[in-house]
Length: 90
Image 1 (tube, one colour):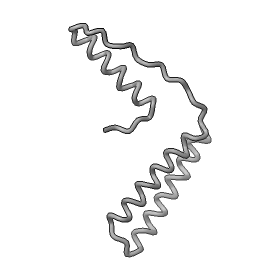
Image 2 (tube, rainbow, N blue to C red):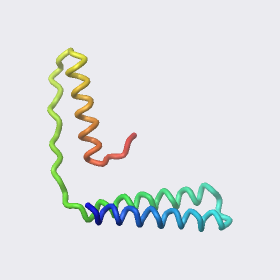
Image 3 (cartoon, rainbow, N blue to C red):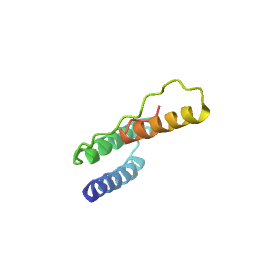
Image 4 (tube, rainbow, N blue to C red):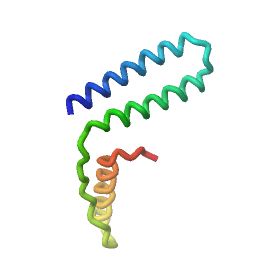
């Protein structure tokens, strides 16, 4: 886990350096932002590459109970499940 954090930190430091370099060039801000976005995605993918795959337990299915507490718990479980899968927020 420490290696992943170090890799992520190194990637973020490179992004900061790149942003400084891009600010000094005459590139359009939109073009620079696009490049930064691509690099951020690459850092995210590379930092997760060295981590062993962990099976994430799926939440229990919603049984249709008409209870705010049951529905709230189901939605919370789904949010936690999706976060553990590292899916981008919509």
